[in-house]
Length: 525
Image (cartoon, rainbow, N blue to C red; front, top):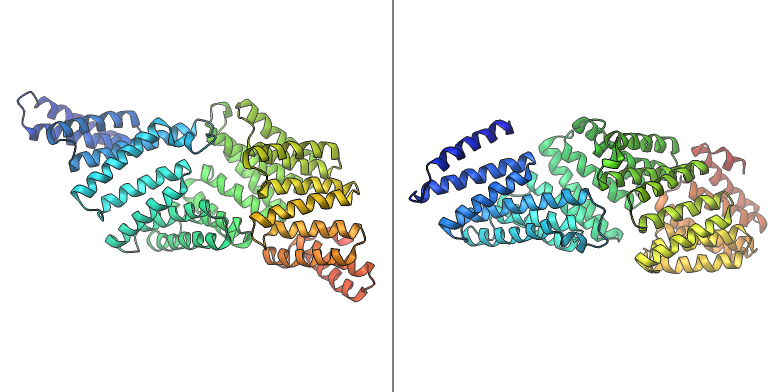
């Protein structure tokens, strides 16, 4: 009971202060400082950060007065003050719009003071204990967490790795602190790295954390659910949709048990689960997940005007994913309504145009393209392209996606030379910044094959389709809709060039997949 503990500390503090005067011994003053330190720890645990800071600062002044600034007592209290500043900084950011750069975090008053306190504590612990002591490892972990929160992932990686090394040296591999550090390193690795082999390192760290946590805590534990959620995130980035689906489903199950059905963590994982179902074209399952996620977030944030920016961004994220899903389901008007709602909420929050707006405009361009509203599609794509160039430059995958979309407008209008020019520029950028077998390269090759087919360049078209099929199968497996479309397109080339037996084999393979999906429109085609 925190309240009873606080009352005991306050009573003890009053009694000890009553014994202190000008002639009091150092022992009496130290007793007061120790009680203040304990009270500061308690207030911190209760979330009463201002009271905790006041008690900790009073304790530090007393320790410094009677022992000087370089002692172990000051080390402990400096770490506590660092913890309080760190949490206050994060709470402040939850209530504000995200900064435009990492420095927007690092220059915050509380963040600067947190780092200063941790550096002091680290120096003193090394001086009076040892550089390999567990307290040193603890401060390194706290510093890593601060850097991670700032988006300064390289610094976070170093601090987490050094903390992990010390903990392993002192306590071995199979303990919860090591599991927590492995979990944190796995997240930082995934934030720092893009290549598949590097993300494999992230998966290894998270799986090792999961192994330790399940062996010590069992399966139905909140920390286990957290690691499964982040494992799902990394698998999703690798387009390992089956494994991502397994992780997210188990994470949702655990989070419902440990946190309740309406906890934000449940909504977050349901949102991600919906995205994976959409990738697998299980649209009804995706819709159910996203609707539940949105209901959870609206239940938590029933008064959106008073919600923190981070909470509002979670609602916006789910609304955006809902719009994307509705577009894939052919519900284009509903999709545009969802995207419009996102933009209106952003305007009500006075949020500046940024990459999120660029992505919304890109998706709206896709919807207008499906509706054959080519002028509106072009306007949306051009606005998206301008924002992406402003914030990212023109040599990145996101920029190439919008170029590809503009190519599709020309394609739909029968302007195949113009379409190919955009497709080729998009493919060139994708080859520069993506793995050679990335799914987006496969999709570029497929579009180029289709444009060449429309120009009756059958040999070139077949070459593009064959390359696209190999990459799509590598990323999506044999039973995916896009793989079936590639087989159908190859069959069409065989058909028009008189290779009817080859065409029949490819048509049958496409038909097999469409039947698995029960996609009547594609089966009829």
